[in-house]
Length: 260
DNA sequence: ATGACATTTGCAAAATGA
Image 1: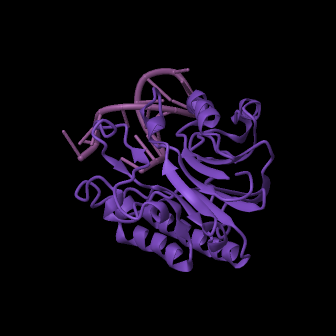
Image 2 (image 1 turned 45 degrees about the vertical axis):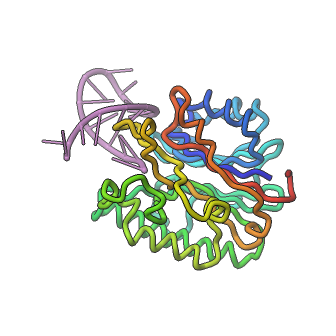
């Protein structure tokens, strides 16, 4: 069973690339972020024609998350991250698919820091940690996949100097990510590739793609019951090099069993 | 670097992003 996460940066603008990738990569489950689409304008018919059932939590102009499942309909278990009824951002949706619980995450960027946006990022992260503990307590396979907007270590970014004041590389952001790891969540990419440069994002600006100046910010965190089944993980880097590509590349993990 | 580049909204230029 292949589970992928892909920040599409606008699902309407990216639809041709998304459909091509679904057809070639054939993930069983795809978590999408940055739909930049309201619920009403989500391209449900095109996704279904590609063979995927879907649930989504849209928002006009920015944010927005979805979960796609090949040949079946995800059963929604959570819409919006619990813990703050005043949070209006569409950044979390969760579903049961084929015995697995899957969360699609779009964690706040947090720039500029310090400031209210960074405070929101850290508060959102705390809510995610709280929710992830409830999920872990169920002792079932869980995959929390998405754009965490965190480079966990200096090996996950192209230039320490360039990112020194960026919210994605701050000690507070990294500490929150690390606390999930210490809680028992497995970073699928690093479980398979313990060291070395692996990037999932390349900025549109300053020739970042051409000079491979990337960041690793899209992650799949596995509960112990999911980690026990991990057989492979990777990044579909070539997708970033296509015409009118997203600035993120799809990132994936394969678990044994299920729809393997 | 108030920059770059891209998308959305809405129809110009601002908001947002990482």
